[in-house]
Image (cartoon, rainbow, N blue to C red):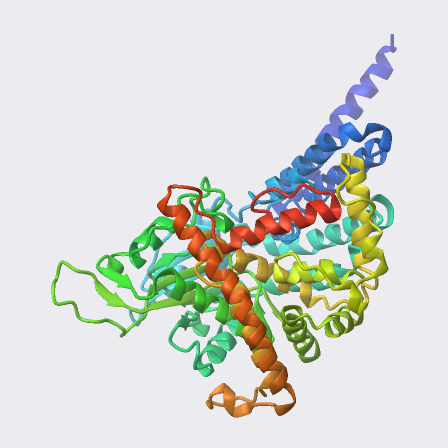
Length: 598
């Protein structure tokens, strides 16, 4: 038993320590946006993950590995959702590449939506005072104190300018700016530890590139510039002008932390039921793609009053055709790519001035659809050399030009051309070994039909990925975000029942970009033909005919199944099943449905 004096000292030290820790926690919470607490939570979680894998990931405990993956997925998901802010963005970046991760990761990251409670109006008012030296009511004729949407980084309010224009006002949450440097520092430390100590996989090479783009996403002046640049590019492209709209930005009401843009009424692509009504089509009852999780209803707002008596021409085909063409133009012509085209960032409305008069007031007015692209914070600029190589790779993949495939992948430091090609096209690609384009490592996978336990699956995946990323210094970092864009667009098409042949449309833009020059001009594309590439383009178009046959056979099969009341999967669903089989035979990994949807 301690003497009275020692007990007194122990009590005092306990009280002082408790008070000190409480004061530090309070100061961190109130003055530092909980940055230290968040970092400690991150380091603790990563320490648990590292210890779990180091101690339990062994051949002797192969039967326990699925449980390890589940624990780690739960810990990472809880970390991202607890910390919020940029952690949600980082988690979504990981989730976009989760297709070949164990099943628990696929399931968890598919539910990582960018939602957050809105901050109270007095906090918003303080942001306006700092940015404009005015309150929202002074700056606008009307300002709705209740946010219409709230995400991890910002929230949106509806307002009306003194000129009578309705606008959407995006306000960055104050804590995000104070947390950013700490969050990215923790991200860097964790990626370094995972590469050097835990997993021995090349993951650190992309940290600087991802961090710089996440920082840029928080600069609303940069976002306004991206929107204005994209609007100019769309207007200069005859195949997209009028079909695509970028909301007008109001620079006089915008700063680095507040962005004001034109308010758009329409139907979000995420609202399948409303979209089906305005185009007059019945969508598949169980859509894949970005709508797989029907519990998430935040982006569903129904049909606005202005479209109650409107029917859009061309149906889902017209909408998806425009979408695929838009992002193909960004990748292969402009080299300036929107990297977050998820359904919540796309609104479909009737094109202004496109109405056809209806003889009967009871019939809906027929209008052309217009795709409105929102949220221009995350863009990537593709270097001209990489843009041309990427287009060449697309065309080579569809014309079986093995030499070009090998040259491009080798120049990018990629060791497994077949695996990379499958990731690009989002469909299985087997490189012709007779032409010498496949790596010898591709055949060193053991018996593909052999049943692997969880440990062997993970080891095989690790070996293949290490052979895939041979030289990360050569790999264009733009591919990280290009892949994200492609997966989300594929998921959008799949969700709407695969109304268009996405691969064909994208490939045509890739090939056309190689046979034309791209001076800013209003002349049609064939006025800029490059004779050196013209013959290859003719061969490419011939090869595309077979792809078209496959697509239309799939459409016929889809319609027959619908008539028989069977599962109504489309072309993208068939591609997904093929990719899942490819992952099983190549890695021994069971990929869950919907893992390739972005």
